[in-house]
Image 1 (tube, rainbow, N blue to C red):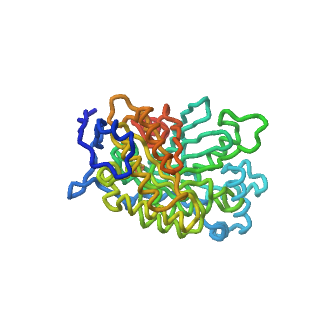
Image 2 (image 1 turned 120 degrees about the vertical axis):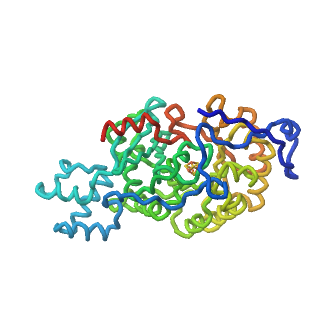
Image 3 (image 1 turned 60 degrees about the horizontal axis):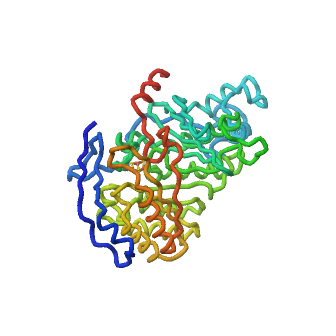
Length: 428
Ligand code: SF4
């Protein structure tokens, strides 16, 4: 692994509103982002390469979850079968989480195989499953039809079950701290490949495979919350992600019958797509992964900031709130000596308050610590000070936990390792 030198700089001038703790922070160094152990791809001008278009690869087979209810009927008819079979199949898939013809006893035995082959082709092959938190957190590694590898992470919390889903194989946004971004974008995932992650998780839960369930708890028998924080930048795969969201919220048996409010769509700041999302009329929770309030740092930390600056991303986030009435989340991974300065908490608070009150909530996330890395989580007192300053400035701020870090299932850690590749090859 290449050792990356730490670069230290003096900080830019603090904003006018910096408060008393600023005395202590003047001694705090500034570590600048750099990649560790890999080389960031650059464009002709030497800027980090951004890949928005999905490379052309063979498309996954068309699946029931790629189609609207009307299209499902047409497809069943194309197979020479009565259209009403489409709804029966959708019930098996979205309500009973099965693609197994043996279990579809309400369908004529002689057409089940044909229907399933035509409408529910296999999309995800499970390569590995890793568990932690006494079985309450499970990371799945899936192989797609073309060999691409993606992951999802299932987490049981008191009162809810959350699935972190992938929307792309790899990612083209090239963020230097992110394991997923290192390999670039392999391809966009299809709508059905996104949905299938949820159906497979629901199947596992129904079979009792997610630990910690209380015997008398009937409320948590399926995934209740979705976060698009697995592999990929969801808004770079806009159409398929939104089709998947529509299928998640469609009442059963046309879809999964989930609440839009339990679905979080996150982005590093693709401003035109945020504007589009605000006009969709689906009240999902919107999260902006900001990680720095100043362009000076964010240009390096989140390369897409070279296209859309901090203020543009925040304006788009505020417009999302103004149009939908849904409070926006700002995600902020706290990285030691890089973005955790008290003046940055003040600057963030100022920028949020300038746009109004009550429209936003900040979620600082301690970065998953890697000893000796420049990507190390902030010290506890620094974290507490960061949170305190935001709260004191009237910005509701909650420190998020980083579930799954022991299994590399936390944000920024989802990447196929060489071991994963080997396990996948052994299955092929
Ligand atoms: S942090 Fe998100 S947007 Fe950036 S490279 Fe990783 S997956 Fe992509």
